[in-house]
Image (tube, rainbow, N blue to C red; front, side, top):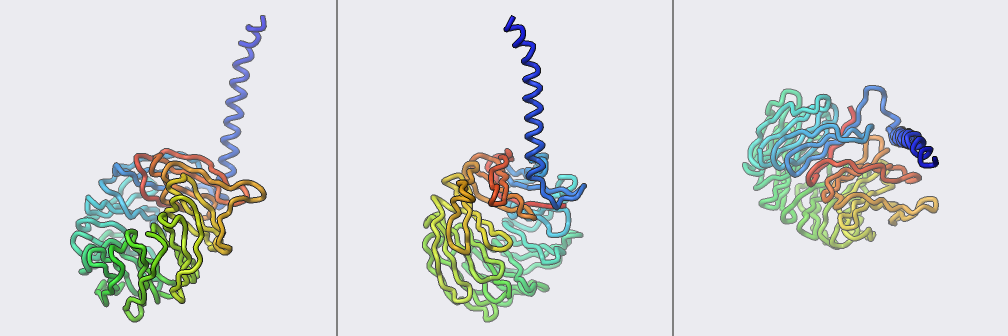
Length: 385
């Protein structure tokens, strides 16, 4: 008798459980849905993977919606500042690709020469600049027509081009001969070549376009370059080999993250002095700054977590309102981004092959979900359109 009653009740229990799960999913969706999204506006993340694909993640529905075959050795993934497009390069394929955000299809492949690594948009989004490391060339491309607007000779093995904030110059990092080339932005002609730290990888430029800081991920040094005079000012000694650097929006400080030293160093960009050191964890790797520069979030590749840092007071935030703040993510977290409104923190986990989505507000910060995106995800772009 009792067994028969239990069996009759089981379907009700199952239905109730399903209803509760649906309600919980709907509640989570409402909680994380960006408030600035109007009907018809979409928010997506784009992640390159080791096997030459781009995975597209709908950040409202919190699920992967497309996996797009592109080509070998993808790099330099960037969202276009005004057009509904995501751009990147295939280093082995020797081309720039354009992904249409509406159709999730590759709309163009533009041959640029052997071994391109990175892209840079002009401030108005009308041009894109890239380098061909294999042919020692800087190229400018029209973003609408995909026509070449110019090309110029560089130093050996150019790996990166960056436009100065005033829009007048393009800085090219030449890895092969350890130089920084300063090119005219309109003609691409090279004005000056400046010796810098060996095997350079990245550059940060002050808002007034006066000084550049050049990082090498193989050297515990940082080059400081006077762009007005075209000279090297100093090679700063760091506590360890750096993996990332972030410039404060006002240009007053530069933060250098180093897995070797387990923390970050703050550099005064006016005096060029290496200042405060903050211990972060086992292997801090990549970081993002909030728009007001009060908070810094850093991925820790060994601890599989994201660390929140009060940058003004130089301290790791361990608790909020008595609640422990420990943001666990997937294995080997690396690339990290905010969504445009800083509602979400997005983290690419190379080891576990997923994208972590985190509530960004300190008062209710927590991991929303981890979305599988493919084999060894690499780079991340976020597009609102």
